Image (tube, rainbow, N blue to C red; front, side):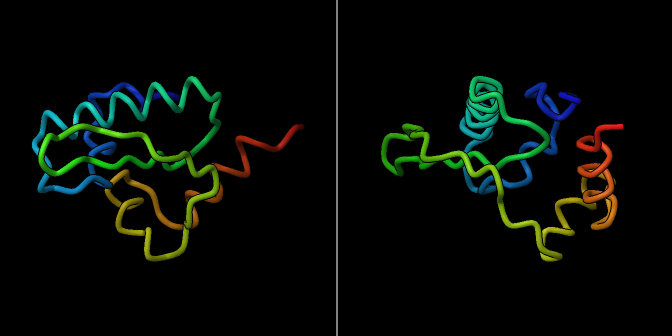
Length: 98
């Protein structure tokens, strides 16, 4: 489901520094979606960037296909309407071959 990858979904912004200008945050989200799709990612990943302070230039750093998903991430999941157990339930159901 690419519903969270449309570039308009505010859930994409929650992991970004709120001190960044909204135009920079929007560009980062657009780049993250493009990179996610280009690399053929599945289910979830974290795409990391650096932003140069003086120029605002955005640099792609890496894709982490197994980002930490401990209970401290529950706040982010709740913003997407998910509980901690829901996340794992979704991952298991998406990947079980019946």
